[in-house]
Length: 110
Image (cartoon, rainbow, N blue to C red; front, side):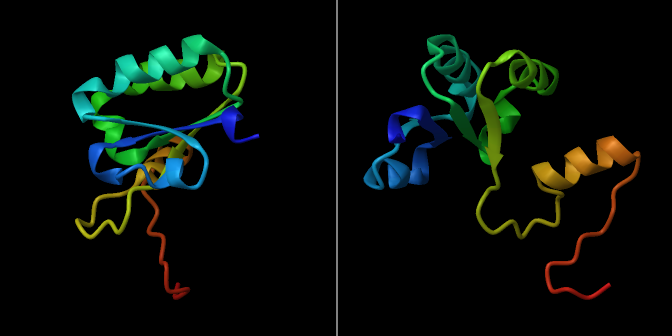
């Protein structure tokens, strides 16, 4: 089953997913789009998970198009511990869908 999952992560991920038995490819941000295209062209994995920190290296429109055309699932793994105040991938996706940037509180306060 682990062969049907591929994790595309940053170089500093130190093969954490591969230690758990999953296929993992570590790349620099500049190599993210060609690496993702190569993985998707293989058509083997049912789930491809991309580290959010690699998204600046992938054209956003092409990324959405890849997800729509791919027969499996293409997902984004949130980057660890964002402290820069910038919205993460999920927050940006929600903002695009509803037309504005909501404030999401992790501590449960409204």
